[in-house]
Amino acid sequence: MDEKRIEDMLRKSWSPQPPDGMRERILRQSRVELHKSSKTTIWGASRWKFALVSLAVAIVVICNISDHQRSVRIAKMTGSSYSDGMPLPAGKTYFEMKREMKELLASVPYDSCPDNSAKGDESL
Image 1 (cartoon, rainbow, N blue to C red):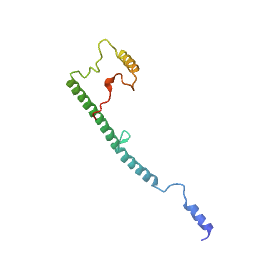
Image 2 (cartoon, one colour; image 1 turned 90 degrees about the vertical axis):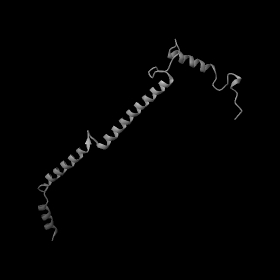
Image 3 (tube, one colour; image 1 turned 120 degrees about the vertical axis):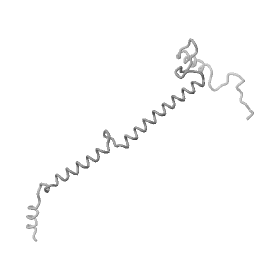
Image 4 (cartoon, rainbow, N blue to C red; image 1 turned 180 degrees about the vertical axis):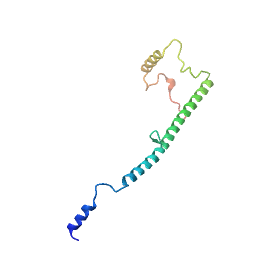
């Protein structure tokens, strides 16, 4: 065969349009795949992500309930109520106590001992 005849044959055989039924097969397969993927999602996330988030929320709630119960039990053992918070001396506000604490810390150097009673115990 010569090149001219091959070129004519290829020119006649080539068509810019897809073969009959190809478009419908591709669209049908795409719809099936889309339908399968939509079954595995909940609000755009896969089921395992939803389960993982639910598990994390459940763990946080259980830990908070457990911590609250433990705090209530400790408050009952110490004779105070859980909602009392930290007791303050009568007549002093939190900011007055904080200022007083800063003054006390500033008056004594942190690396020296104020009296001789703080000598080391040599019994070790």
